[in-house]
Structure formats: C-alpha cells, structure tokens
Image (cartoon, rainbow, N blue to C red; front, top):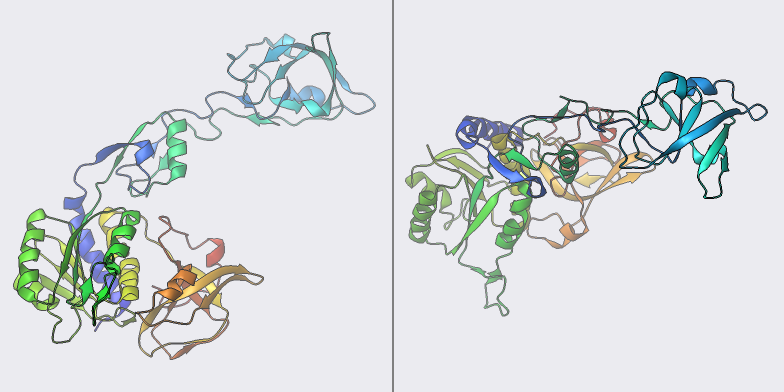
Amino acid sequence: MITHAQALETLKTAATQRRPGFARGPETVAIENCVGRVLFSDIVSPEAIPPFDNSSMDGFAVLASLTTKATLREPLHLEVSGSIAAGDAPITQSAPAIAADAWEIMTGAPIPTGYDAVVKVEDVEVKRDKQGAPQEIWISKPLTARENFRGRGEDFALGQSVARAGTRLMPEHVMALASLGLHQVAVRRKPRVALVSTGSELVAHTQKQLAPGMIRNSTAPHLIAALPSYGVECRFYGTVSDEPRVFDRLLAEILADKPDVILTTGAVSAGKYDFIPDSLKKAGATTRFHQVAIRPGKPGLFCEFENGPVVFGIPGNPVSTAVALRFFVSPYLEALTGSAVEVPLKAQLVKSAPKPEKLRCFFKAQFRAGPQGAEVLCLGGQPSFMVSPLLESNAWVVFPEGGTRVEQGTWVDVFPLHPMNYSFGSDSFASSAPKQEGCC
C-alpha cells in the first residue's frame, strides 16, 4: 500500500510520459465553445485595447494643467467647442486651441488629441443655448492628468500576454478574446474516457422496483454527469456482472476504440468477486499501484497499457467514486493536458473530528468565511456508502495520515466539492494560514 502523495507522483509520471502523444496537434474552436477547454499555445494581444484614448465619464475634455488654480471663488472659464459621442471619430486639435476650449464628451467617446483629462458634468457649471447645447463651462477644482481617462492599451497592450498554454479557458477569457477580435482559439483535444460499471447487484438507476439484494447504479450517472466538467468526453459501455469473461470481452472492445482513460467501478478490492486486477493483468496492463492509504477509496487501482490507455479501478461505493474522480482522475487529467495544478485552500477546523490512523482522509465538509477567516466543518456521515451528506457539502476537507483525531483550530487543506478549473496560488487570501506539511 502506498501513500496518496506517492500515488500522485505515479500518476504525474504516467501522464507526463503520455502527454507528447496526446497533445499532438490542436483543435480550433469558436470562442463561444471554448469554456472548459485547455489552451494549446500562448495568446498575446494582437492590438491595443482600448484602441484609442476615451472618456470614462460623461463630462468635458480639458487639459489638466489649465485647472491647477481653479477654485470655487475663482473658477476656470472655458468655451465649449463641440460635442463628441461614443462612436464618433477622434478629433484632432492644435495646441493653441486646446488652451482656450473644452469639448463635451460622452462615456466611451474618443478624447480629442492633446487633451488629458475629463471633468465630470456634475462637477462643472454649464451655460447652454436654447437647444441645450453647452456653450461655456466653469471648473471649480483642479484635475489631475488622466482623470476619468481610459488610455489606449490600458487594458491590453499590443503584444501583452493574454493567456498561457495550459490555461483552462473560462467565460472571462471569452470576453477578453472577443474584445481583441479573436473569434477562434486553438485548444488541446479532449481526453476520451471509457466508463464501465461492474456488479451483479446493480440495476439501472431508472429501475422502479428493486428485487431483493439489488441496488440502483448511482455511480455511472454521477460520472457521466460530472466528467464533462473535467474537460473530457465520456462514453458509458454499460454494466457487467461479476463474471470475468464478460468483462474481458468488453475490455477488448474498449481497447479497440482507443480511449485515453478507462474507468471501472467496483470489483477492485480483495474479495472473491474482485476480478478487475487479474483481468487487466491478463489483458496486458501493468499495475502501477493497488491500494492507497486513504479513506474512502483505499482499494483504488491504477494500471497502464503500453501504447494504450491508463485504467483507474475505482471502488464501487458511491463516495469512493467521487473521491477517486476528484483526487486521482482529476490530477492525472491536469498532468495529461498540461493544465494548471489545483492548489488546496487553507481553513481552520471549527470542530474536532476523528479519523483512522495512518490514512489520509477526504471527508465531506462545509467551507465558509467566518469571523476569524476561512473555516471548515467536517460533517457527520462519512462512510463511503452515505450519499446524503454530500448534499449538505460544498467542500472536501483533507486530514493528513498521522493521528486518530484532528483538533479544533487546526489549519487543514480544503478543496471545493467540484473543480474550480483554476488554481489559487500560495499568495491567495485563503492560503495565508501557516504552512502545513504533507498537504495533498
């Protein structure tokens, strides 16, 4: 039996060795369809955004240096040369004219050449003609250069890095790419996952009446629903009984389809009907680890086919499945696609909790921002068959291997219940807690 840290190193090594073959050649997708995909290559800004100096307020464009002596008692008086609306072409003024006038300007409108500030309309006294057009203004307080001023390239400079290869794209990236005129993006292809359930006791989750001894298959619908959020394509090959020959035939079919990953649920422990390890070995897979010092999910199995897929043999209990996906499959996919490695948050445990000795525990939890900072509560109902506490959870709290109890006030690692698709670095607000050895 190995530790979770050792298992992660094994997974990382396997994924790194397979990445060159996996990452060969990008796919091009419309930016509207890129969310959740992993960027194939760096993106730099092809232009400056904003593309021109413009106003962030409705008001009047002026030269800030003219306003240095403006006061309520002696306001600066300027004539208004005209009006500029959003969408108008920029206006070029000569230097002598700038000193003598102002321009009415609307939010987003281009600031005339030579002007460097905008005074808000509510901060000036305005004289208007009968049609309501401004003719003169009086400014009663100084302005600083670039006040209410959006500079060309202030958001994105020409050639600025927008996103690095390996970034998992989010809706915010779509907004940035659209503003830069990029309507397509090169992404890495999605890993293909083959899913198989095992268990003679399993019936479809759509089964209304259960025969004695039977249970509904809850893990397959869970994985089918969850895997797309991990950036993969999933195909479910069905449920097989605890009959090795049936599984062997199905495995041959799956291997012929050339998936990147095979997930099996059930039949990986040490019981009479736990045939998955032997079947995989007989088919030519090499076992990299079997049994990890964790709870839940201790019987977990990881194998590799040379020039073929990797296999995760996941214990059949539903919470073991959720933990395996979150803390084994997800890190492997991160390494395979070259995406950012998820970093745990840090939080203080608000109530002491028991744990088994020598096992790293991934327990259902509630994470919250408390009066003392980030806090986490380990919930009751931790057995791996109990799904109901997951409905009250928003996080996984991680307890290290040592000890049989984690005391109140201890800083512990916390992961969101589902991947956030990006990482908090060590300088994030939630990571300001004292460092703790052995984080996952």
